[in-house]
View 1 (cartoon, helix red, strand yellow):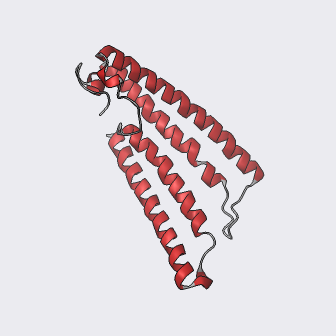
View 2: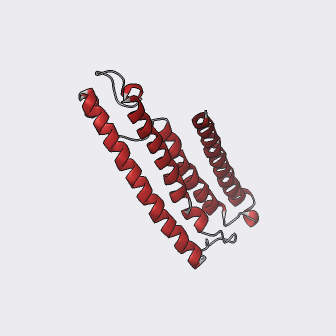
View 3: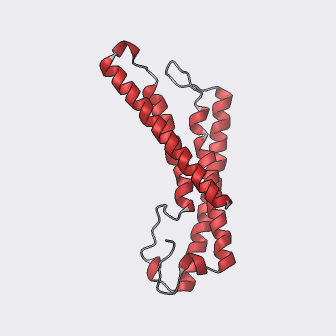
Length: 170
């Protein structure tokens, strides 16, 4: 129940951010051509910030729905026990990578706060808002991977991997 709510919130949030990015971009483009004196210098920058946030947050949703990029072509033909081991290994490495990204992202965010780094446009947006997407998104993906690892251990791969001739995560 909580996972379904989480999925829905993430999907709506990513969609809202993407629509906002498109709206800001369109406004900037139309203003540049129709009313150059009203063309904002910040439209491109805000669009980039929003697109980066949408992309990074979508990683969690993709991991939660088993739709993230993975190389499992060879693993699919292996025996079930090896597929479970490979999936376990994959999740542990994924969690370790995400935790490393959360930590390094935290260091970058902390440094940006220390420097009070700001964007070049008239908005002077604190760059920390841009950098913060890395530790937040990777933290969410780490939680998703951890939940999948727990589910894999709890079911011994029954729900995740199917029967012996099936494929890994759908």
